[in-house]
Length: 333
Image 1 (tube, rainbow, N blue to C red):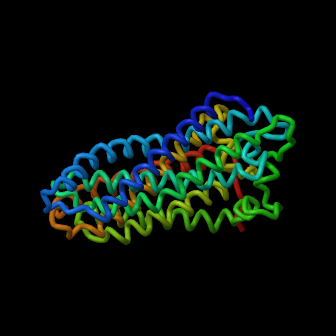
Image 2 (spheres, one colour):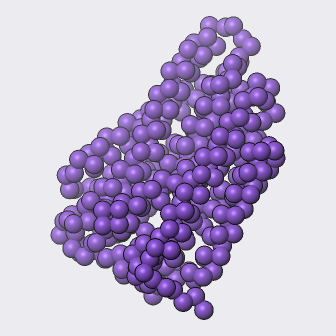
Image 3 (cartoon, one colour):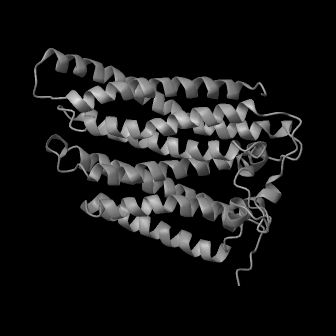
């Protein structure tokens, strides 16, 4: 294992979050079985007192969970100089078989944490906690992801050894590579550019429609969720080419480095914002007719729609700026 401040912070935070989630999950089982807001029993009063404290701790834990995703990619990028052949986080994650699975499960955990925070915020704004059972059921679904992430991340860091020769991003994200990364790099730039702009236009149209007239929440949410993989694949397929001004460099990690203005962090942050807030709109729309939430959810969803649209729009503006400013002309035909 390589000692690094970010690694220590990630390991400590992952097990702290996992412990809090497991503890809260056992408490959640009591909520699911015995919650009755109309009851004045001692058991119900004890549950109500504990619920606020548990929810507050979980909210803090999930904020750390989201932040840990960005700390993880920073650590992976900063570690690349320790390994022969690595040029960025792509090489660091390829040092052992646990790097990329950790990266992928952290993406899912980050999205789930964001959605739970949205659900919890809506529930806390109503006087009768109408979503309390649902948010603890959601928490139970999250447990395997949070615990699995902690285990995978620990295994990945423990198995990091400086004497390993790894692959560079140029070979990992090569169109000739027989792997998932190679397949993504092989996606036709022209086709991906068309799909990218189509999804962007649909998000803007449905987002404006929902924010102004309050209609089409779920279709907007659907496009927001679809946009996440489309924009991610576009980053590998053609956006990265213009960032590097190289027609064969598809790596989505080199853009995290200072040489490229650390712009990768902004790409990742806007993608996460667009995905989490957009998916949150569809999730909350399912509860818009719940008594105490009738006047709460529409206002929350409009804000979420604005944040989601803004996230994807900022991502697109940066991408278009890079395309227009680059000294690179790609032949799509």
